[in-house]
Amino acid sequence: MGQQLGFYLNQQFCMGCKTCAVACKDKNDMEIGVNLRRLTEVSGGGFAKVGDTYVPEVFAYWIGVSCNHCDHPKCVENCPTGAMHKNPEDGVVSVDQTKCIGCRYCTWSCPYGAPQYSEQRGKTQKCDMCADYRAQGKDPACVTSCPMRAIEWGPIDELKKKHPDAVVAVHGLPDPLMTSPNTIYTSHKSAVSGGRK
Amino acid sequence: MLHAEWPLALFTLLGQAAAGIYLAVVLVREILARRSDAGQAIKATVLPSLVAGGLMIAAAIVSFLHLGSPLGAYRVLLQVGSSWLSREIAATMLFGLLWLGSVVVERRGGAGLLLGRLTALAGVVLVLCMSMIYQSSVIPAWTSAYTMVSFVATTLVLGGLGMLALRPGVEGVLPVAGWMTLAGLVLQLGGLPLYLGQLAQGSAAGRASLTLLMGAWQPQMWSFLVLGSLTAVAAAVVWQRRVQSLRVVYALLLVGLVGEAMARVIFYAIGVPVAVG
Image 1: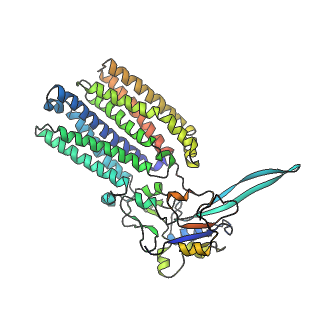
Image 2: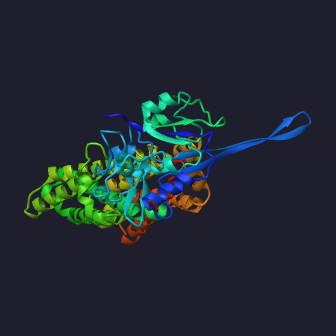
Image 3: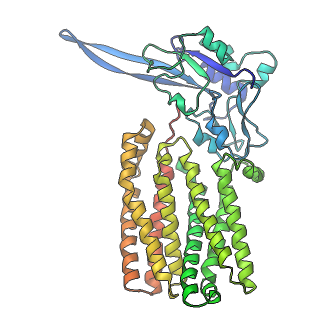
C-alpha cells in the first residue's frame, strides 16, 4: 500500500463552531440527519471545596469525528457487496455508490458512526476525504473551512512526525484497538485518557 | 433503532421458524423411520416440510424490504469470505435449494432422508450466521453471546410449536416438540440474567441499552417473561398429558409466537451503538 492518509485534529484549538460539519454537509449535499463530519461536546465536572467555599471545577471540549480510514475497518470486513472498500493506494475507506445496496450493516459496524445511511438515496454515505478535491490538488472541505486551522490531513506518518504530542485515544472516543483508526488528536487537557501515540 | 428494522425482525423470525420446523421434521422422521419405514415417515411430515419451505421463501421476500437499493441485491453474495451477511444469504439459498431437492425426491417416491438432514443442517448454519451478523457489530446489546442463545432458542421454540400445531397426532411429534420448546425457553429465559449483568457492567452504550430495557421497553420485557414462562409450563403439560386438542395446541403456538416476537422487537429496540456523536 502507498502512504496511508489520515486526519489530525487539535482539540485545544477547536471551539465547536461546527463550520467543518457544515462545509462537509454542503459539499456532499447531505440530507437532514446525515452528517459525515460531526462534533460532539464532552463536558463534566462540578463544584470543588476550596477552604470554606465551593468553586466551579468544570470542563468542556469537542471531539470532531468523521471517518478515520482505519487500518482494520470493520465496515469493509462486514460489507456484503464489496461496496465499502479501502483504497490500496492511500488507505482511504470509501463506499462505491454503484455497489451499495443500503443494507446498513456498515452502520452497525463502525464504532465512530462514520457510515451514515441516506433514506433519500437508499444507500450509505461516508467521508472519502473529499477524493474529488484531492484529485484537483485541493484540501478536503472540513480542513479548508476550519477557522481555527484545527484540522489537517495528509500521510498519517507525516502527521505523527509533525505533531509528536498527538494521540489516537482521547476520552469520549471508542477504544482505538477496535479498528486502528488513522486520526490523531492533540488532546484537550481534560481529554487525556492514557492516550496512546 | 427499531423503526427501521421491522423487516429484519420479521425476516429473522420467519427464517428461524422455517429452520426450526424443518429441524423438527427431520427429528420426527428419524424417530418414525426407526419404527416403520422411511416412506411412511416422510408421508407423515409432508405438510410441515412444505410450511418450512414456504416460511423461508416468505423470509427471503421480506428481507428485500430492508434494503435501500434492492435491485443490487444479487451482489450480496460477493463477500462470503468476510461478511456474515453474505454467509447468511448463502445459507438461506442453500437451505432453499436443498429443501427444493428434498421435495422433488420425495414427490418422486424417494426417501430423501439424507437430503432432509442436509437441509436441516443448512437451517442451523443459517441461524448461526444470522446471529453472527449481530455479534460482529459494535452494538453491545447485540455482540453478547446471548444473541446466539436467543436466536437458537427462538428456532427451537417456533420449530417445536410449529411442528406440534401442524401434525399434533403424529407419533414422535409430542416428544420432539416438547424437547425443542422446553430446551429453547430454558436457554432463553435462563440466559437472560447473565445477559443483563453483562450490559450493566459493560460500556456506556451497553448501559444505555439496559436503561431502555428497564425503562421504555419494560412492559414488553415483562410480557416476554410472562408469555415465555407460560409457554414453557403449557408445553410441558401438553407433552406429559399427551394433549392433542387443536384448540389447546393452537393457543400454545399463539402464546409462544407472541412471546418470541416480543423478544425480537426488544432485541432491535435496545440496540445502541458505541458510536460517537
